Image (cartoon, rainbow over all chains, first blue to last red; front, side, top):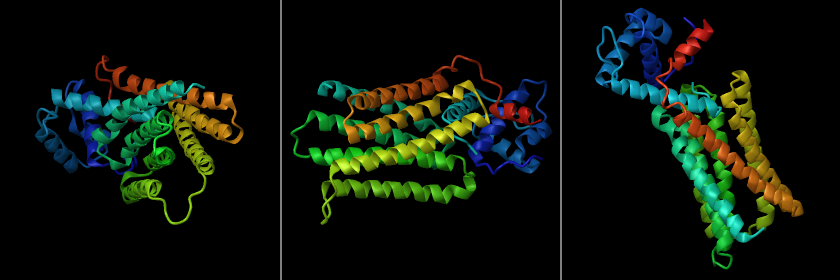
Amino acid sequence: MRKLPRRDRLKIYGDLLSILYSETRKEKVILTRVQLKANVPFDRLKAYIIELKELGLIQDETSPKLTEKGKVYLREYETVLDFMKRMGLTYQ
Amino acid sequence: MHVLTLILAEAVSAILCFALVRFMMKPYEVLGESRYIGLPLGFGFLGTSYIFMGLALYFESFPFIEEIKWLQLFTQAYAFAFLATTYYFSKKPYDRTRLWWNIAYAGLAFATVISYLIAFEPPMFELPSYKTVDEYFRLFNTICLTYITVHTLRSHTSQPDPKTIWIPLSYLLLGFSQYSLLIWSLDSSFSAFVGAHLLRLTSLLVFLFVAYQAFYGTRAAPLAEGILDEEASSQR
């Protein structure tokens, strides 16, 4: 696994939603692939997915797809990251 | 230059700054990290400093005019200090510097309150002349803006993108504006004075353009491929 700086919960949520969104455009969401991309242990990934479901950001836990609320949050998250990039701010 | 034109320039600058505060608030709102609070605070203080300057120009015979001029100096310096602090901590790891950025912001907030008290309730010793202090403050502002310009420029060169060149440019213009005011303060050059105001307005407009582009320029577009996904594929 590649070494990444420690992330806070919101960044992990944002990253996970971003990965899940790109994965849902493929046939089926494979959690192992999500885990590798998100760089989190599998047990923690499961816990985060349950939390995302409780927040109403994804539909179900086995094959997680983004809800409308999740898409709105992800759009806002990516817009803010893009704005920060334009502002020359690093988010880590 | 006509006083009314100057007041108008201060008013327009203040409006632009407060419009920017709305955008600068977003990283703090969405990511919930207090280290980004320096952005809206910085532009908020900057806008307030322009209001103080406008008031000082409008009410020339107002009894508290000297105090307002001092407030303008302090407020503007804190604006740039907040911005520089935000940029400094943005490149540090989140978990290791959390305490330090909280201490830095608390220190700046404390210094703001103390300096405002000093402006209205001068201490026993006599304060130096406004003109002398003004020059030192301009120098401080220029240093802060130089640091931010270098920071944003390095960020741009590490991942070159046409979208990220505008912000170093606008900080550079803001820095030149402060430098021009310093020159004007030293040799009363009219062109430096006019240039400073023009540079500042141009810089604030560029900031607004960038913020507008980021938040509304891509709104109509469908949800993009995740940013993280792009980063991951570029690393593979």
